[in-house]
Image 1: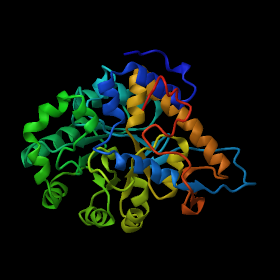
Image 2: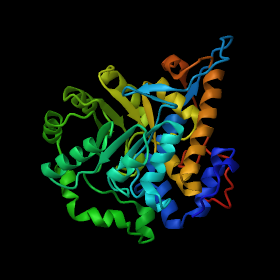
Image 3: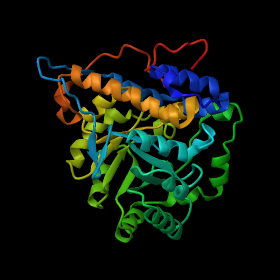
Image 4: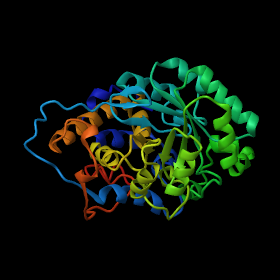
Amino acid sequence: MSNEPSVEFETLHEIVQRAKLNLSRHLWDYLVGGTETETTLRRNRHALDAWGLRPRVLNDVSKVDCSVEFLGRKLRLPIILAPIGSLESFHPGGGVSASQAAAEFGVCHMLSSVSQPGLEAVAECADNMKIFQLYVRGGDDFVDEMAQRAIDAGYDAFAITVDTAHYSRRERDIAKRFEKSWARRNSANWNYQATFDWKCLERFKSKHDIPLFIKGIATPQDAVKCVELGVEGVYVSNHGGRQLDQGLGSCAVLPEIVDAVDKKSLIVVDGSICRGTDILKAIALGADAVGMGRMQGYGLAAAGSAGVVRMLEILEDECSKALGLMGVNSFADLDRSCLAPAPVVTDPHALSAFPLLDVDANPY
């Protein structure tokens, strides 16, 4: 894989294109694909495109600040680099490369428990806001051990993914007989995730003194249950369209979840968020931060840690210009009055936010 200087990239689609050229077809399909018909993946993009921006004018927007406060820390952008399994498949540095990029730029990194080189090594590599995300692969003792390790390593919060009770049918992988090594390593213990329930969550909150995010919330009912158990972060997600097919887009369900939570918890949302205006829309709908998974993968595959930093720099430029053109000075000035339902003008898919991609060199 290439690790060339990121300064050559001037647009996000150039980073995506380089990632496509650097990755094998197996890894590219793992990164961009979803489950079965990939309808949920497409609906994630559709849910963003179905909102139009309503700009105000004649406000002084000579100074625009893209930073936010999240969990008591300042982030340069309201972005969490979302947990991706086997980051080392996109760049040898894996979680270290991603976390170092997050630290250099100034955003949060959420490390997947199935990414190498492990939580301690990643925690030691950089001083930035870090959250550790767990797939449940053991009983109470396993969960407690992982939580304590994260606390001891200095993670700011802990996250448990709850939308993977069963591993989905990802037909891009199945059709090519691509067996992911990290999935194979954990297959024997998959049943622990299926048995993890609200009682387990209640037990975790009673035992561990670390802010907890629950990732994979898709209904207001489940969001309210999280709040009632004292969860600090509701993470609205459908796993990037990689788990349940025929689901709703994350930003389609976000408003009702925001209303149900009623500011009693932080809210993170992911799902095809890959442009500055996507971030604006999610924040205007009520999210406190957005998760970005595939964009992180593109940056790593394109140019390692430098590629992720450059991706974030371009996103910051997009956000700053979009905020100013919306007539506001910060993300805090956005609310739902800034949005209106709008017709979707493109066919939504994983790469539809990048219309300038060289289709011949980068077929979807």
